[in-house]
Length: 274
Image 1 (tube, rainbow, N blue to C red):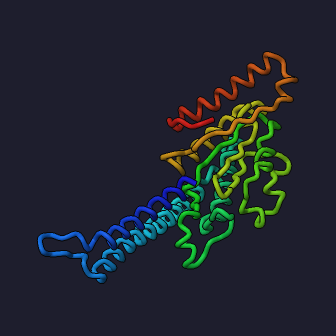
Image 2: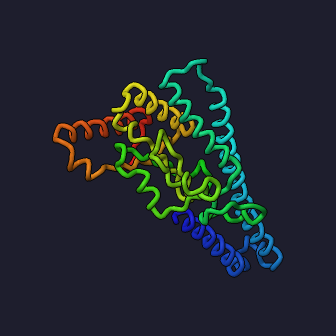
Image 3: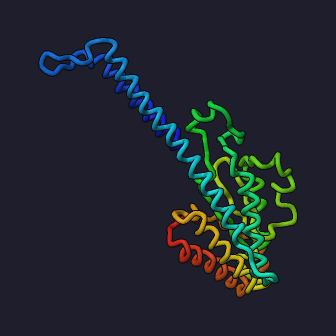
């Protein structure tokens, strides 16, 4: 919405300038020289202004596409070069799986252009749909954290967001049947949502493996989006768990959540909403 309003204000500003040139221009003179007195001179100046604006907008589109493609290629090259040892440890296997899932998503989105309707844009018309275009690099990224079974995937499924990959992978992939094993990448028209496994938050099933996978996940985010790894986190807490847990268990749960949030702050060194 902000982008649409900004574009609308710019267009209205250009229209206002053109109207001033057309109606006030003939009255502007330097001594006896009135450069805008003729209709032709005014049309040329208005055309130049409109042309400069159009070239600027087209340049922004191509620059965004170039940046998006470069990021996608970097991701693929990075994952291809990240080969582990002949017999990787459980932690290395976990991180390798995270990279593989990321690579899978990148291959799908490398050449895909998403608009606000969730359709693939193509042709000359797509170049002029500037306010509606969303490029993967420009979309905000949000990370879901929470204990297993706290409702992260359920919240995503019932969020009302549009998932452009539903037709490609089917509803089973979109619904996350069976729970999130490591990290599911949910690409919507408005944002990229990273649904992390609940064990990454609690790190109770296998502490060393879960902790290494979580740190590897943070490394991936920082490597691929160094300026702004994430735009925020979404924390889910199960009311049922809180009611069933003892005070000591609730305290341990709270400490685990605080630790993950603190690790995000320390690793990325940015402020983000929760």
